[in-house]
Image (cartoon, rainbow, N blue to C red; front, side, top):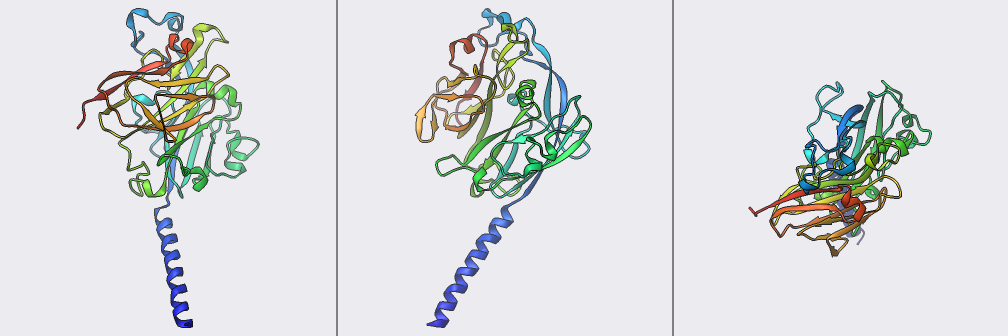
Length: 328
């Protein structure tokens, strides 16, 4: 009896060790090199309304180019070769990816003329990696660098009702109400550990395309209407290309918002529906600092509108188009 019980205990212990070893083998330290830089940003590079060309850009087209601040990703510590970024990401900083159990090492270089930081949502960190609120990494001076350590524990990953990957924001938090308006914002996408494509690629294997959309009004001219840029990823009136899928593809949309009390948005897709926590809809409500993810399988081919359904926001150009092609 004792021998049998001992064998059973040994089997359980070995099983637990196996699980822990497998989890450890899958966990990774993922490094990113990111600089904050001053750039010239054009809200409508085509200089025209690509949604309804005859309507023009209205007062929002009087000035299209402004000095902004952005997070730019680089391939290594030399900060010489920028990471490629798809057009649809627009003004967003690099998308940081991880699977549950991973650790993110973020090497931040401030190449601008003001103190800045990187503050994440969702992940676990100590005071010195919060990028805010008095820690060592909360106030990085011009020309200086700092490494943040962010832990992607189970509380940073998808919950029981979430899809296989979810989205978190990161942004500067020295004077955060100014710095997000400057353009210093990006996202972290976290995948369930058993849904990652591979150890080197934490993107979810059950999805064909993942897209991110930041709905935000940038205030460029002290509340003057001409400077209130109603954007998706920093572009107006259809000047954000690159959203593309085919009928039957599995598409995940990560939706985020930032800004002020006017940044209450209703995100709407023409021709398609999405699943949001088991609910079927074609409109998702966002408020400032909202983060949510929805799944879609496109069913209708066409060049479809993707826009905010708030009337004033539609008039001000908070819209783009996305292409659904015939299936495989």
